[in-house]
Length: 255
Ligand SMILES: C[S@@+](CC[C@H](N)C(=O)[O-])C[C@H]1O[C@@H](n2cnc3c(N)ncnc32)[C@H](O)[C@@H]1O
Image (cartoon, rainbow, N blue to C red; front, side, top):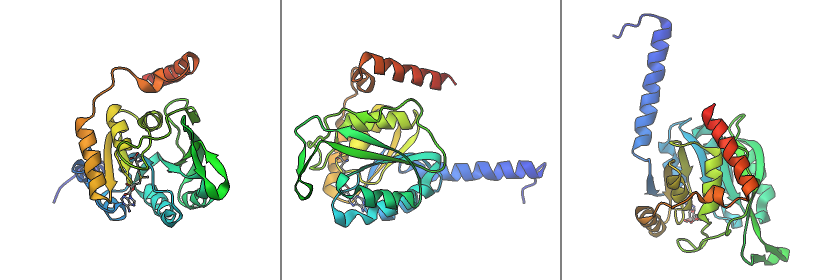
């Protein structure tokens, strides 16, 4: 039997042991795209082990129940103050927000602009030129810098998935909502956009993808990606916006 100098020492030792166990369970999954159903795979993740979930579930109506599941699991695996940022189609935004709000705290609705011609949503006779990125937190939380609520990206990138998103949008919001070395979870990896964006800015990622072919495409993309020559996220902003964001990041980093 182990002897401790005081009750406080024993509690600290137990806390350290739990931290160590959490870390080693995560180690095997870090920076991997794992093939399988995220509703099963997420059970491998300990509670309070993930810093940010940035994700993009499928939009059709039959997938709506995934948002309820996502919010419930986010409330379990996110660290206190951590964020879930999820793309959501405007068609079912109301239902999605109802589901997310059951387990998490609403924070903001960010907008990813589509710089192309947009997509006609025939049942609404509307040409969609933006997508919502909904932000919910586990308890009180804040991004690490002032965050633009509209991001002017290309809106999509179909090279790696027919529903693929552009990497600059993911990169910008992951940058604002996490720090270097943090763990980002993407339960619906698709072509790997979230994982690539995380890798570009020194976050660890965990990707789950049910479709083996898609998972393989994402793994190949990650293995062959190149680091950019300049900082896309800040250089895309106007000079004034860029300096506000840069200053906020520097003062945050210093504090
Ligand atoms: C909208 S796509 C993601 C596209 C991705 N953001 C990109 O830029 O390439 C959603 C992905 O979730 C996957 N998916 C759907 N249900 C899933 C589940 N239960 N577990 C894991 N992946 C799932 C689909 O196979 C699809 O590749």
